[in-house]
Length: 120
Image 1 (cartoon, rainbow, N blue to C red):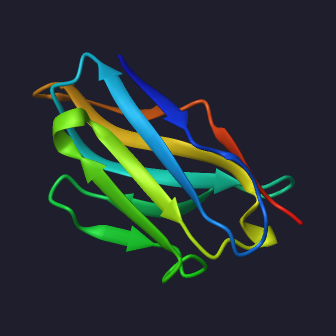
Image 2 (tube, rainbow, N blue to C red):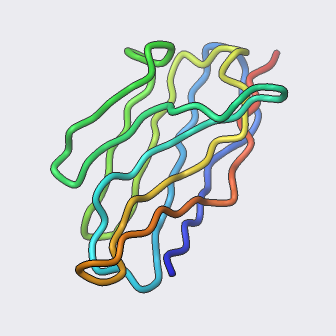
């Protein structure tokens, strides 16, 4: 089992910044991709950004140029720096990890979610 614990959500004014963090723990053999998803009320969960263990990144068009994903492989952690936040960024943000608990056993794990609210 792999547990993901997120931190860093909150209330911020439009144009402000927040930094989300997510730490993975448990029976981890290796972690491939880590990422952030979000789900706004009444909408489906969507990918915000992802990063592989080699540092390749992928962003949703709506956040390109404003959000930056990074990771610390030694700490099994992933971060999301969110700048120039807009009201439409308001959502619950979820951390995701594609990992192996044994060389041939892969699992997909989710954090509990952290609320980000952008409002004046």
